[in-house]
Image 1 (tube, rainbow, N blue to C red):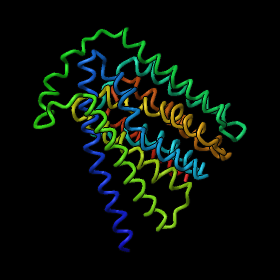
Image 2 (image 1 turned 90 degrees about the vertical axis):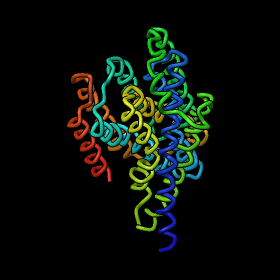
Image 3 (image 1 turned 90 degrees about the horizontal axis):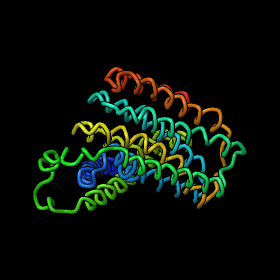
Image 4 (image 1 turned 120 degrees about the vertical axis):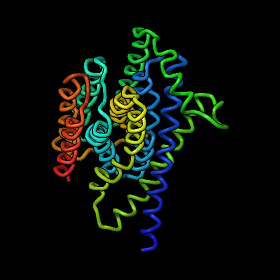
Length: 319
C-alpha cells in the first residue's frame, strides 16, 4: 500500500510539471511565431508537436529496446486515438475550436496518408530498420512541405500576439529568449510524462492489468497528457491553431518519426491484431475528424462530445 501511494503521488507530480511545461511551450511558440512571422498553425505542426511527442518517443524506444514491441506499438496507436478523440474532444468541450481550411485540405490528408502507408510496411508483421528509414524520409518530406508553405502565408501574424505575450510573460523570467521557453517547456513535458507513465505502469501492474491494456490505455493516455495540457492551455488562450495543429502534427510525428526512429534502433515484431484492430481504429477516428472539421470550420462542443465518445468506444472495443 505505501508503494501504491508513492506511485499515485508520482503521477500527481507529473500532472503539475506537465501543466507548467505546456504553459511555457505555448508561450515560447506564440512568441516565436510573432517574431519570425510564422503562423501559429505551422508552429503547432512542428515545434509544439515534436516537444509534446517526446514522451511517446522515450517510452517507445525504451520499450522496443527491452523487447516489448507490443508496448511500443500500443503506445503509438493508443496515443493517436487519444490525440483525436480525447484531446480534441475535451478541448472543444472546454472551448469550441476554430479551424483553418488548410488543416482540412492539406494537413488532414497527410495525416491519413501516413497512417495508411503503415499497412504495406507492416504487412509482413515486422517493421525493419529499412522501413524505419522510409518513415523518417516521409517525415523529412512533411517538414519540407510545412516550411515551404510558410512562404505562401503573409506574415500578418507579426504583432498579432504582442499584447497576449506582454500580459502572459512577466517577472524575472520576462527576458528569457523565446527558444528558452520552448526548451524549458519541452523538458518539463518530458519529465512530467515520464513521471506519469512510471507511476501509472506501477499502479496498473499492481492491479493486474496486461501489458497490451497498459500500452493502449495507461501508457498511451499518460504520454498524450502533454498534448492534452498544451491544447487546453492554447484553447483557453484562444490559440486554436496551435491546439489543432499540435494534435495533427503529433499524430504524423508519432507514426513517421517515433515508429521510424524506434524501428531503426530496434526492429519491431508486429502483432497480427495491429492490422485488424488497432490500425483500423486509428483510421476510423481519423476519418471521423474530417466531417467534424469541415462543418463550419469549427469543432463545436457537441462535436467534441462525439469525438470523445468515439474514443471511449474504440478503446473499450480494443480492450
